[in-house]
Image 1 (tube, helix red, strand yellow):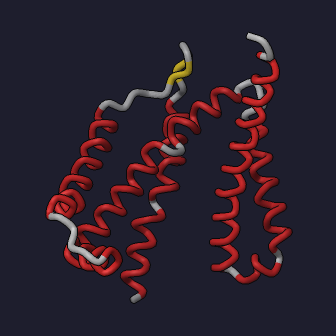
Image 2: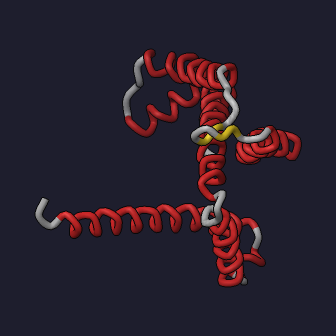
Length: 183
């Protein structure tokens, strides 16, 4: 193909810019949330950003070692999948069962100006929570130890991966209980 190397360079520059953009968005969410919660961080924002990105650098160094592909595979498998499903499950339960489908429907009506159909109420109240529970249950029942090509990870690596996944999820019920007890 004529000009193939040019398109390759453009493609990889696009990947680089998309990766950097995602990194800045996620980092800004962390920085803003912690700065709002702890005023000392807001006063020393530059130092906090330097420490945060130094931590990113040190974690990124792990992927540059001889076993880096194994670390990336471990994080890819455990860091996002179940964590996101559990977060969405907690959100669906809190909106539909705790806050209530009726109140949520009234809020939607006040924003849109018309009543939503019973189909949406049924989906919010039953379909979404139970469907997500089914996906999580099916995934846990069919859990297989982590592998990379022919290499099977040791038990401690699978436990570490589960701890990484749980670290993202455990904050939701802990903070919910904390807020209930506090108010």
